[in-house]
Length: 289
Image (cartoon, rainbow, N blue to C red; front, top):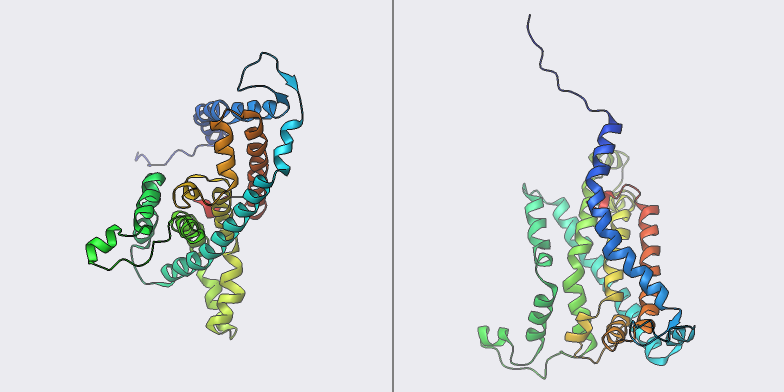
């Protein structure tokens, strides 16, 4: 008798059980490094104490006064302004790059995509400091290409912060948009052309709507770090541009944990709201892969 080589099919519930066991260590670290600090910050919001000392700790809501201070309102406005501008610019250039790569005849598209997102694997502080050296007068590019010095550079201006954010977070927009484009059924393009659509109508009525999930996912991945980050405005803005992340950093550095916790929880609520939006628009998380 001949033995048939048949692959053993593992039931779906057993696969799910194995994945749950493998995920448990990560869940424990998540609880320890994310959930526990969040609970501590939520507790510190409603108490009045110096640092984290429990001596003389008393219930208080005076910490919420930081939300109405002029510096906080300015920081919130700057955060929203820079985050929205950066997101819009990243949508434009990110979609342009992703669509061009999607339409190209290259065989190793994912290799090109890897080269585009490769800089994001390096330390963000190294990239920001490299940009800062370029934005200053008498920079390395002038030395290499023997260019004359022009002005005082753009370091310490809004332009420097905006360019730094776009340079840093553009790969986070390209990746989900390209992934959503790749998941479009090619038969839909052929069907639209058979129905008499022009290339522009095919793009506007077929390609663009079907890639909207990638735009939403990419926008949130760019918007949130732009709002909560503090390294880019601190280094490229040279301390002249104040975002909400800078106030949180200053609060924790000066041991004003109570006031810093209020702002951190507000940002956390915004992040959780963004996650809910992703779950509504992309329940399977396909554009994030």
